[in-house]
Image 1 (tube, rainbow, N blue to C red):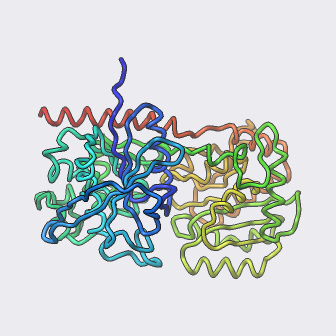
Image 2: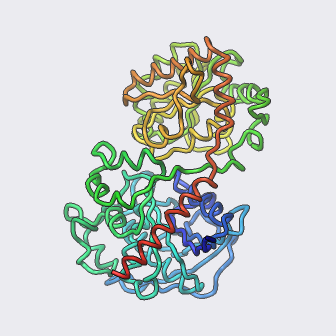
Image 3: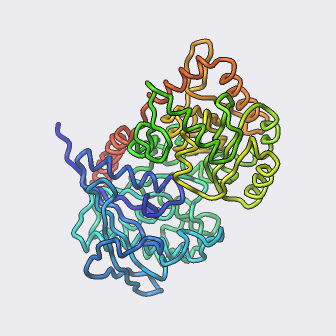
Amino acid sequence: MIKKNLNILFVASEVAPFAKTGGLADVAGALPKALSEMGHNVVVVMPRYYAIDKSKLAHIEGSLCVSMGFMGELWAGVYSSKLPNSDVLIYFIDHEEYFGRGGLYDHFGEAYMDNDNRFIFFSKSIFELCKMIGFKPDVIHANDWHTAAVPLLAQTRFGQDFSDTATVLTLHNLEHQGIIFKGAMDILESGWEHFRPEAYESVGHVNMLKGGIAYADAVTTVSRRYAQEIKTSEFGFGLESHIRAHAYKLFGILNGVDYSEWSPQKDDKITSKYSSKDMKGKLLCKRDIQKYFNLEQRDDVALIGFVGRFAKQKGIELVAEAIEGLLAQNLQIVMLGAGEKWAEGFFSHIAARYGSKFALHVGYNDDLAHKIEAGSDMFLMPSLFEPCGLNQIYSLAYGTLPIVRKTGGLDDTIENFDEASNRGCGFKFESASAHALYHTVMWGVQTYYNNPKAFKEMQKRAMDMHFGWDDAAQSYDDVYRYAIYKKRVSKLQ
């Protein structure tokens, strides 16, 4: 049977390359393109933040009128563009009061006090936009707490026009739930009957993500392992019982990677291209990163890279506890990232003490991230929890063997090295401890020195693995059709 192509509205608070703080933006910038290539009609919507130059966008005639309850009606402009290297339209909601700021969600780490109103406004505006441009979605795909009001709004406030539209909510990181003042129910204009423990109520507050999970026709996470983990108290952040109650509509779909950007065969940001069939260029990339960081120029030393946020979730405390023990060994470490100020200061101090073996760049630099992926022998990613993770998949593509904690998407994507069977593509540990991290790093380092043949075979095996968005898009297609079917059945009951 020929499947009908779908009208899909993809809604996110950030979309790469226009605005990005994390993996959500990468997904929102890549998945819609993969869905479009399957034949679906996909439209993306995001806020027009101050950093997005509107002079480079097309202005849409007219304005959106968005009702905000007792706050009255607010107005928004609309701009459009296309996702790079695609025909996928992306619309930008322009409202200076809410989005004309330096940050997306915070100012120097302090969350904006009106984030609740900002993203309720954005969630409502996407329905008004659909009416303006004449787009009738079969599915609205919402992401994280910022747009978790969409499933409820589709059934209530905008139910007259969107009663046939199914909703899918993706959980990229359950730690951030959008817990806000209960008065937000008046802003939602969907009725206080939804402020109850099975829906939006959580200890006297509104929990946006909790409500989104309750009302969405389908819920997804960004890896199969994470879909199981969030049902437990260790990873559920207080929502584990709520998630178990909705497990029948929960699906784990591993994120993909845009290999047009992250491939050593195509990457113009690295000093020498290479492939699994000819890896000579990887050594040149190693020399390049050593030179860039003013490390000792050695071909024969194990070089370990780290790119990520300096945050507890990413295991930065474990790295800090283990770092001096590691630097007493025959290896080099380079780190790129920013986040908690204590970590930035601590690793800056380590760089000053161990300048020939350890280097640090505080901040985020995309070109440098590519250079580290290409020039390192191994990549350290010791997350306490990791819904999916992308850097370990980038590392596989570049033949940079991941050293990861056995959690979430890290566990789904990395097969542990087994010397006896000559299988695996990286090194995994289970305990969230500096001791486990240290010994697993040393396992990788000793394999590099003492079993170079197996290490090289692992690198080539890793580079030949595939985690493309085409696979993920097919899985999302299945979920969309499940959500549409579920929506139709519920209307008949």
